Length: 490
Image 1 (tube, helix red, strand yellow):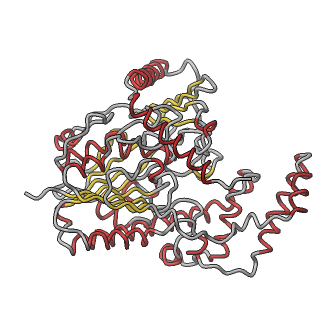
Image 2 (cartoon, helix red, strand yellow):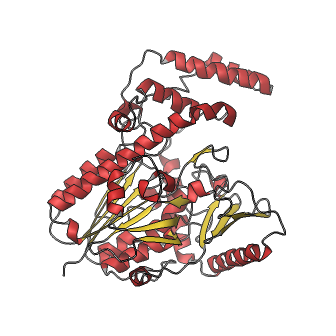
Image 3 (cartoon, one colour):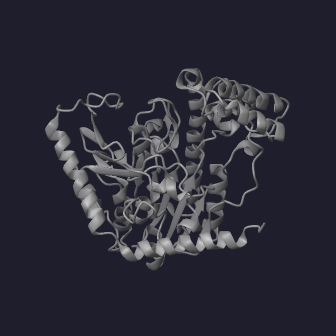
């Protein structure tokens, strides 16, 4: 029997409730929906960290994001990963990642790949419409406006509309406005690599950014979803307004549905391109020996709790609940698994499916045997990040307080270490996590999840790999030294 190949597709910011096979009523993912009928669907897959820089250590290395310390980002040098395990087992390996700066060789994600393309050297997009080139006079005016809240608000409003006026006659294409390469570019590169591949098993990782802001889906995607698609000019305005930090929920809410339409266009385009990749695999006679997994690193917020995007100010369901579809040549009998499943277990499970030994350093474990037996064990999931770490290139951002969420089938506990407080949610009666359970109510459930969190923190502290931590810190110090040496001298 031929060894199975593996394709892992991660879609940045893809929410669980925006795919059809998990209940989305709009036809956003027709291909994945059809594939889901013959696949294993994890209905309650939960990331181990959010956003990207806290999510992918679990996906690629089966390691909790803060296990090496809050000051460590990415994959440590010589840390075992899904890619290194497969390469060492004789697999050809390739990664095509659509320009996410946190998934680069700087953070160790190239380890184990024969071919690694992160698309970070792409030409810059057009100048941001909300921030035209500032003159010296305008900088002085901006500084003066900050004397009071009223003058600051007036300046911000006038400056926004001035920016819109400046670009009123510009008609750049959507491709020029898009910050990241679209999914078709990634699929094209992957298909070329597959076409040149020698016989034998392979591992292909694709990371798609079509659902990441700014939201600029191809016109074809918008036209397929609506009889009156949003124009490029309108999309530019919506992205500019949505990105304003000085505008509140009340003013943004009327535009929410249009912004969601742009986001959904990205979902649709990603689905269509995944379909194209599968067709290529089928035509090349590789599909019947290939395991395909589609998931996301985190979700996205659209004002459900007053927030936008995926900032680390909370661990709400919109951010940590992601799609997870697993297609194997011989699908298991249980197609829809309702138990909570942490992505910390994804890499060891995939290795088990293709028959490659799981590295000893993985913190997760394979659940493939449980899936085949039709009895996935229900256990709490852990999600952690650093609160308000929105610029991890800054060390002081990384060293802020921890956020930790523990979720089981019925309840979710969010622990805010800065506030020294915890918030319990009854997911059956409050699935939107709108109102924490008052203190003193459901005390047994709160204590049980607190004990689970305590055990997780205890294990993290006791089992920290000092060697990997040191290697990661040394790598960052060398990178900082190179930056200093290559910076222009005064």
